[in-house]
Amino acid sequence: EKDWREKGPSIEELVENENVDILNYMGWTRVPEDDSITIMSMINELSKAVAQQEISNKVVCEMETIEKKYKTLRDHSEPCSEDILNAANVLTAAYYQIGDTDKAADIAEVAYKEAVKQA
Image 1 (cartoon, rainbow, N blue to C red):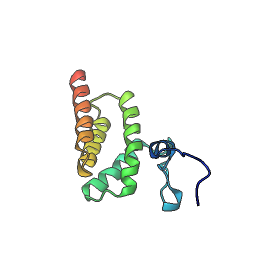
Image 2: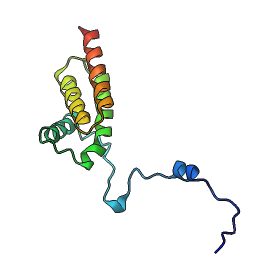
Image 3: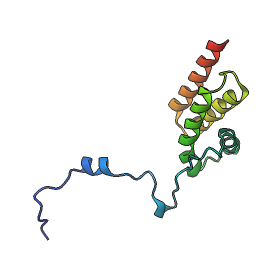
Image 4: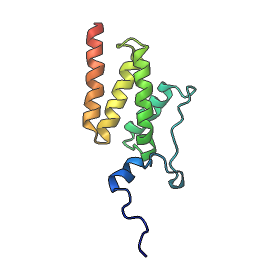
């Protein structure tokens, strides 16, 4: 059958308009942005996954939310606080473990520079 339209959207246009962040039929779920889920509980769960060297796809998806919450925590805490340093350490290790060494280095560098400023 011949399409009645002369020209449809390009692949680039289709991809640009597509949103496949969450595919419910694949069992993917959005990480809740609920404040009742504290950053430290998320960091503790991530720390366990890092220690076991078993970072699942679900945890990888959650890492973006964890990083956002970490940045918020950083904005409201002292750079050398135990929570900030622990969170930076765990996030750095997690990103390193999944092979995102640039992200790991960025987190470590920011934590270091902010701690040096405070000292």
